[in-house]
Image 1 (cartoon, rainbow, N blue to C red):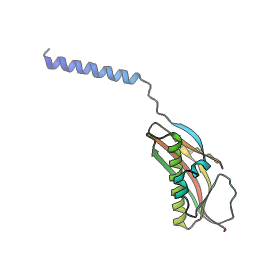
Image 2: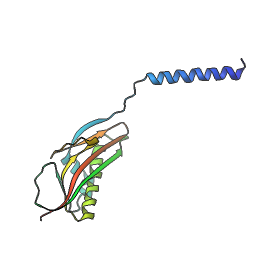
Image 3: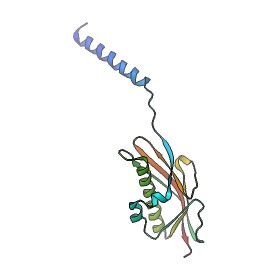
Image 4: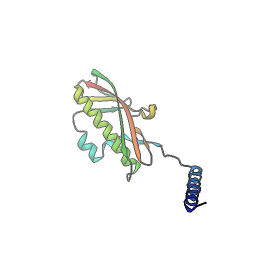
Length: 154
């Protein structure tokens, strides 16, 4: 066998060894779901600045003034790069992004509130007045919400 053949055989042996070793390693993607405080997410400085547009948010079955017009149920699904962020910070950022999208939709449609906001991550519905669900992985964090855009009596 010439040198080229020996080198190729050596390469194949090393390559196959690496494949076998990597195949034996148990690689699991992190998908941690956790509940976070709505009030804490609303009190982050970014939220105080960006959610002050005259649109009110009501979570779960919170009481609210009478609905005079219902524009329909909408979904907001937001993800962010979780690299170099705590799970809490990434989840608060996702929460804010979702509320901004609800706020913009309500403004476009003529509504003044979003009611019945509930978590809906991977179609798992959780209705709470105090907490929202957020999933965090090694590189990405995400939330999904459902809510009804409405016009409330003043």
